[in-house]
Length: 269
Image 1 (cartoon, rainbow, N blue to C red):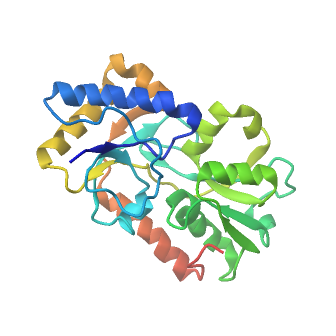
Image 2 (tube, rainbow, N blue to C red):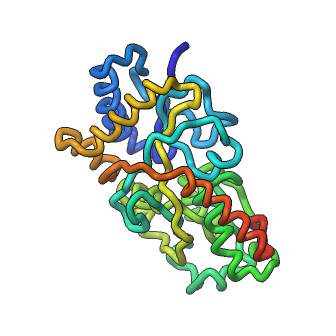
């Protein structure tokens, strides 16, 4: 069985060399540790939310909310990255509510009745976290005039700039990479508000991965995250460290879902 490796969460075309460098570092350590079958290259075409997590998935990164819902029981978490970007605090992240720079809105309340650009209905940063934040001000009623699903955070940003919508909720790490690689486009938007924090998007392997291989993956990740020889691989992805985050922290994402429902806002609309 051919094993798969991918890094689909932060995967702008401009980042392919950085993602590939990180994988080469990890792959080299796995081979040194005696793992015989290790994918040569990352699969760049794999989307962030496939229909299911493949049983032959050796290494990837998957959003925390689908891991607790549509992908429940399909993956083993290997560690959570600590990103050196605004909006992160240790192995956490949040989302930024982003509008065009010329928007007259001063806060979220000013955007009631606007059009929201949604990356995915099962996204934590694009749906679950903003739903919880909006529940505080929605008053149990629909907040937006319309919600348009775009298929990804980069697509949401592009459509925001085209004027297809008025607001999007963008993972703060995606936003940082976008600002790094596309500064001219980033200058045309601004952050209106922030969502609550949640655990960072974890690195994962399939639940079918043998326990000894899981241990090798975890050790290799910690090595890449800590040794000076891998500083360039970390810097390309703005990773400062990789830490263990308890399962209960990710289960807490469902608490945000329940709290939004209790506030009368079970769906982001």
